[in-house]
Image (cartoon, rainbow, N blue to C red; front, side):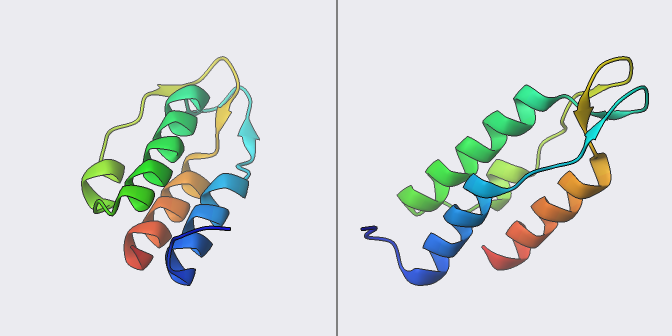
Length: 84
C-alpha cells in the first residue's frame, strides 16, 4: 500500500504503465532517456518535488533506429505537468 495521496498515486501508476508507440525510420525520441525521465518523475512525485523542473528537458532524438513517438511523449508529459 502506498503512503501517497490518491492523486499522486494515480500519477505514479500512469507513469509506470504508459506505453509509447515506437517509431522506425522517422524521427522519434531516444527510448532510454525517456524511460529514465519517467523513472525520475516517479521519484519526484514520491519525494514531493515539483514535476516541472524534472520534465522540462530536451530529449535526444533518433531517426535510423527505434524511438518513441514524439507527439505521444510530448502529450503525456504535458498532461503530467498539468496534473502535477
